[in-house]
Image (cartoon, rainbow, N blue to C red; front, side):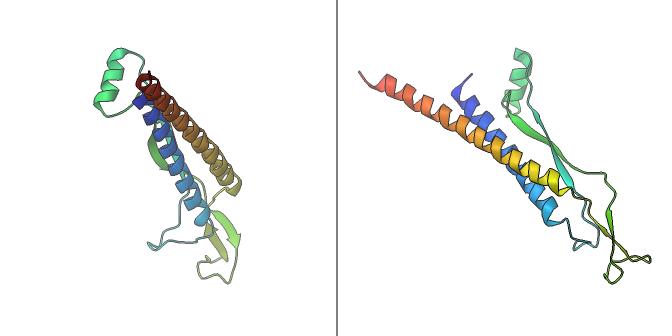
Length: 147
């Protein structure tokens, strides 16, 4: 595996984890919003990621041709979660319905906090792998330069 592939794989992992952090914080920040500037209720989001697979030489060439690195992570899509809103009885709220219920986004705060923790740990692991590869590359240059 080329050293550039190692850097690319680590960098792609860091990028995916940063997106997961961004989406989780957006979900948490909007968990008490009854409606956005567009007037619609916020719908919680989730990041779906995958690894770029290459089982044979032909698929590796195709991945490289598309600017992808086999083994790297990529975001497949960011999907809206299909969950019913969380209904809270607040008759005095301006967004209350006829029964006095207010619809809030159904954000599971525990899941979002776990996502933040996990994404942080995976990001740190990718940084360590990146730094280890950088250290190995520097040592390789040192070996070739000293007599």
